[in-house]
Amino acid sequence: ALVIVILSTPYSVPPIRYKKGFPFSTMGEIAGSFLPFIFGYAILGTIDYRAVAIAPFFALTQIFWRLVHERRFRDIDLRTGKKTVAIVYGLRAAKAISRVCVVLAVSEVLILFLLGWFSLEFLFFLGLFYLFGFGFWFYLRKYTPKVVYNAIGPTWGAIFVLIVVFFL
Image 1 (cartoon, one colour):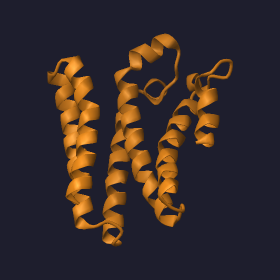
Image 2 (cartoon, helix red, strand yellow):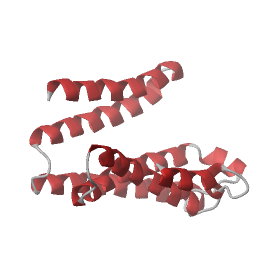
Image 3 (cartoon, one colour):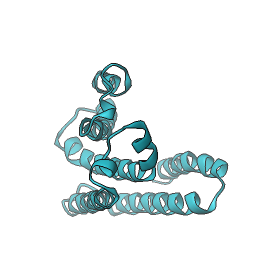
Image 4 (cartoon, helix red, strand yellow):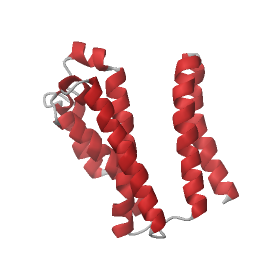
């Protein structure tokens, strides 16, 4: 937790505010997506090679969402002077990188499954979670009022965790 505090404080607090400087803004997001899984794993047990091997999946998924966010808020970031991948390299590059992240994340899960690290049931529920998560997210964002959309997003994650805990 101390590492996250050390990394996140200069991210937003003046006078440093490295979130405005590229590539530090993006690098901070990458570190911020890798470390929470490792810390959560450390609560349950000792960090081993499995934790380090699985963590990139969550980091790649978070980077994907970060790039979606950067593309979506590009105009606001331009007005505020924040440098992001979508601004420095363009929307097409941000989209291409986000697609690469998805391919790498899926590839990692499949490789770890083939190595026997994940059961077929785990793979099914992980796929279901991301399928519904991405599908609902894109559908709801387009066709649902913002109030409903904001309420359903976190609720879906909590319901899915309860389903996995009680049915597995």
